[in-house]
Length: 222
Ligand code: SAH
Image (cartoon, rainbow, N blue to C red; front, side, top):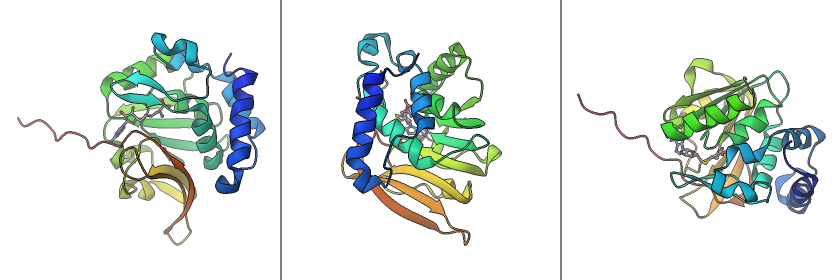
């Protein structure tokens, strides 16, 4: 079992409080069901397990965090995905956001820079028999060209500007949600849609605090 009713209620309340900014009025039944299904405790380190169902971001090692449940819910709502969709995530982290999305779409592709986090997320997802998430170790700023174009793209680490490769891997009409801004401050969660003419329409949704999207180290010299 995933999020208990107390956490669902806290998330729904925060969605309602922020509706004026986000345009997202309520926690939908589909996202609610996904949150109820996915056990967040399976994605946090043992030392944090007692806090798994509190509406807070938590450390997952390597100076990274699993996002606050409200933020996971909001970003999932904003993506507005459907059962046939193929979604790209940048920043697998614990794998929790990917797990929530996997309950709502056909396939999730997720890119993570830190190999150890990717391996742990793969294990967590496999333990739950969530078979429609594929994780790759690499620099998410480049997206994942092999499976493009995507119906939706979610970026869960903040960059001053959206990496240009990502918009190119989105289907026309597709939605992209990303925190835009410098490390740790003045970030804005943005919802971008690709217009039929190929330009991005950006809507500023809510101030947020994400860990930075890091640059991949240059390839080792031979
Ligand atoms: N979605 C995650 C939370 C992500 S935290 C969850 O549900 O738990 C942000 C993640 O982005 C971290 O794991 C970090 O290692 C990763 N990251 C940072 N820069 C990256 C990059 N350039 N490419 C891919 N992943 C990156």
